[in-house]
Amino acid sequence: DAGVIQSPRHEVTEMGQEVTLRCKPISGHDYLFWYRQTMMRGLELLIYFNNNVPIDDSGMPEDRFSAKMPNASFSTLKIQPSEPRDSAVYFCASSSGGSLNQPQHFGDGTRLSIL
Amino acid sequence: KQEVTQIPAALSVPEGENLVLNCSFTDSAIYNLQWFRQDPGKGLTSLLLIQSSQREQTSGRLNASLDKSSGRSTLYIAASQPGDSATYLCAVSGTGNQFYFGTGTSLTVIP
Image (cartoon, each protein chain N blue to C red):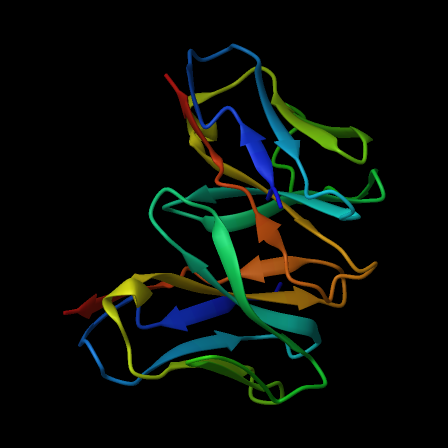
């Protein structure tokens, strides 16, 4: 059974460029989460979706960040324009069961470096 | 805002020892608490989830307890093995549908 799949695994780009991170959740899961992990701030929830609808985006740091979930099997996190302080590991996770009381399954993350 | 603290930040033990990892949180209004394991370069793997109405959960050599009133949880690992070496994180989900993670405890089990 495939887990949460994220692409790319690594991304290096120059400041000012648009970055798009992709996530395929586990089939049948109705919650999808985007997290950012840095040494300084640890793991932070950016946004989460339930049945493809954004529920809470209060963790999105700035208007430069946007996330979409056009269907149950795909989500994107976009940064435009990117800045060096956006460098981090971005994780996608999904869960099932119709509530938040279920374990989250994480992808292996995208390591983003903005030069 | 919920604050989640994990102590110690790093722990090194010889193989076979039993150990306890600690997690504390400031707001007791939580839905659940989860313990995760993170290996280098990987995502998080959920180990145990304790719902707010529960006191503990067990899986194999792992036992997690929850004391909501005091804002504490512990993860007990019995008979530690080198394969247990990883970073362990706890996370609480609040009634406001927010998730807060601790900064983790880096565990090294020495053969």
